[in-house]
Length: 252
Image (tube, rainbow, N blue to C red):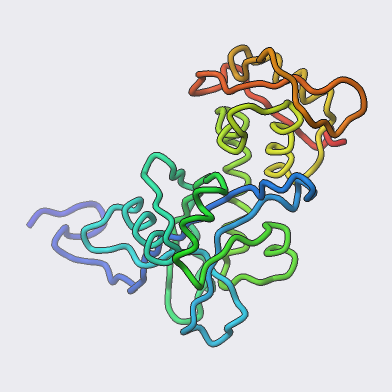
């Protein structure tokens, strides 16, 4: 038996029992453009009938299986609890949450993931679940409807999603095949949770070559007076060569 500077390698330190969970934040956007953009951002949540407080909502999640990696657990629990099928490429890690008081039953550590999913496919999958639904991000946060520290997880997941919109064309997932710059701005405003000056937004989008491509078509409807808005389609970029960043100074 050899020695280290601190203790023999055969001696074990006493370990506290704890449980490792994976919780998943699935964001979508309500396609109803009559709704204010800040209220269009929605989160997939569920009610667990075994909980003492039936009015509390929770993120889909659960214990990591013995033979699973973290993403496997995320995919399994979201599918089991909501019917929505995710794949590993859609999942991005938000962080770890391990406050000793986060669960009053036992010591629990949660690894959180976020996924951005367009509404039509997600809504269809939810038809098979009677305990899960999409609820407005603002409502969930302001009404204190969530159990444990899930409100904090959702807030940090929104920040992760915002970072993704800065560096990748992921916002285009929430646009139709043909869309206007105003439609795209609505996606950004939903995740940013504030309005962005339209002219400033257009300048930043136009500065990223290949992000969106103009079509020789115009929108049949327009929210602004004057000529109809030009239509666009998604480019082929995987990442944005120039990040599209907004701060409160860009707020309208």
